[in-house]
Every structure is written in C-alpha cells, then in structure tokens.
Image 1 (cartoon, helix red, strand yellow):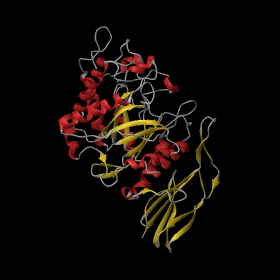
Image 2: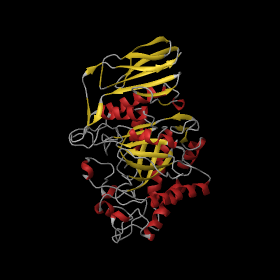
Image 3: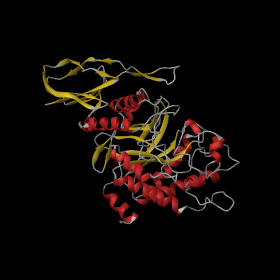
Image 4: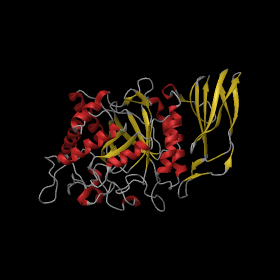
Length: 450
C-alpha cells in the first residue's frame, strides 16, 4: 500500500485546479479544460464518521461525475433539519468527527487539533484525487438558528448565532482565522481542491468584511506556502449582480439559480459562475436535469445537484428518493448528467461563449461550433413544487443564424444521448431553420463546421 503522504505528493504533478487561461468561465484540471458537474451527497462525507466515502467516491467516478462538496465540521445539522431524511450532514453524536479534540467536560479544545479528523480529511481528498474528482472545501456555514450554533465546536453561549461570522467577537474571530490557516496548511499539496468561504452567507448575519478576512487568510497563508488554490464565494439564492467583487475570489457560486439569469448578469466578471446547490423543486429527475443543462449552456462552469440518494449505508447512491424529501437524486439522474458531460466534451467549449443573438439557449464559437438547448421547464410562483415542466411529446422548430459553410448536425436526447444519425448540410448564410425529432421535456442540438 502506498503511504498517504507519498500518494498525496504524487497527485501534485499538476498545479491545483484553476480557471482556464483561455476562457476563465471554465476550469483547467490536470492540464485539461474542465466543467465541474455532479450530483453529490449533502456535504457530510468527512465529518460523518459512519459514512463510507470510498464507496461514495467510487459511485461518483463510475457515474462519470467529477466534483463533490464537503463541509469541514465547523457546522453540522441535527436529524430532521430541513426535512431531510438520512442526512449525511447530521451524524449521530458518536459519529461526529470534529477538527478539535473533546475535553473531559464534553466541550472542545480550540487550542488543539484532532489528528483523526485531519487524517480522514486528507484520505478523502486523496481518494477523490485518484478518481479525478475535484472537491469544494466549504470552510464555514451560516448558522440558521441558535440550535444549529449550539452543535458547533466553536459554540459560545455569549455569542448569538447572528454574530458568529461577523467580526464582532475577537476571540471567536481569532479561532476562525486559526482554523482557516491550519486547514489551508494541511491541504497545501492537493491539486484537486478549491476553497469556498462560507455556505449561504446571505443568511444569519454574515458580513462581507468577515468573508473578506477569511479570503485574505487563505490567500496570505498560501502565499507563504508557495501554493495557490481557487477561492469561491457563495453570493445568493437565485440571482444577484456581483458588485465590488473581492479580487481574491475566482468562482461565484449561486444556489437555486433557475432560470440561470445570474450567469448573464455576471459574465462580464470573467470568472467562473457555479450553480452550487439545487433542490426544493420536488424529486423528479427531469427537473434537475433541465436545470443542469440550462445553467451550463447559459455559460456556467459548475453544477452541483444535491443528491439525497446518498446516505450512511447507501453510499452507492441507491437510497430511493421520493415523498417529502426536499430534492431529488439517484442513479438515473446521475446517468443523465453524465450525458450532459458527454455532450459538452464533444465541443472545444473554452472557445465558446453564450450566443444571445440566437432565439434559443446557445453556446457558440461563431462559424465553428454551436451547442443548442431547448426545454419546457419554468418557475411557477405560488405552486409547490415551484418548478414545473411540460411533459407532452412535441417537436421544436427554431432558426439559427449561421455563416455560409458546410456543417454537420446531431440531435441529442438529454435522457439517453444521440438521436438517430448525424446529418450534413450546406448553408448559404443567414437564418437556417431546424425542426427537432419528437421528444418530451427537453432536446439538444450539436452543430459544427465541417
């Protein structure tokens, strides 16, 4: 068996995942242009000691997905929070793996570190790296209420949950900075990670000044170590114009961004834009498949579906998802997301940009390659679930404006892959009419110059 530190060092052959130098809306990982695409567990793979993360990572790799997201253990949940059954982020107390050692009175020693935690964290990242999986390491999370704050090893009864991530308590801020430095130092040799400052900091009193301090701590610590990983910032649910962006931030994450208006609003920043969490739109596969295709074909660089089929004892992602779960997931959806990854891999996508001159969702390199997507989902206010999809069989007809040339075209069913045979056509320039085969819910088209 290869020792952990030796294997971790061997995985550092390439520099850490970074924004692609030719098109920073996408990533470069181990020398290859990359879109990060996954349907992943609810962030507890490391802090929940009962979770078999090797089996979980094997499942992601087998399903052709290349990303996951973890919380560091500074935040955790209790069973039943947010209506989630079998929540990996809500371990039994005996299974919780904290970054800090426990003291005899049941509290945590913030002046010390738990070696078992860091060994588990590093092994998780090593195992992910072996499988080509990029890990978003989310350093902190807002505390939605005081009950959740009491579960944290940082808990201080003199601090309300709305002041935890706000620079209002110097001793607490000092502990947060020390934890950030420790984690960044421990993980300096991994090429398959990037850091997110905090999950959903737009709730719970989190301040921009506190976020800037954590980003500064990551950047300065890494500068002293001679390494540099990407830093992500979670901006908003749905959409928001990013104003006065922190120059240390390279990835702007949004949750529940459907439709993906936020991509166009922030495309001028020339940074990656991610849909980092989905859910609360029912449990049907086509809802989250449509949201993934729509976001990435709008120019996003990263999509993470929150997959409730992963749980302790179900690390193969085969737990049935249905009923009152607050989101979807499962093997069928992951297979459909793999088709999206296959579709994108057909293109030199770093040469492509959102083509807003076309009447349908299109990424293009003008005159060379076009990725087109049509779907029939939309947000319905006042309904539950709020995202509704038309499921009747139909054809779509639309025009694309193309330069004169020789082209090939291939229709794709996002549920199953290519439809029929590729066709060739000559075009004299201007508008060209396309009529799809029959489909339900959504359809995609690949057009490229010959």
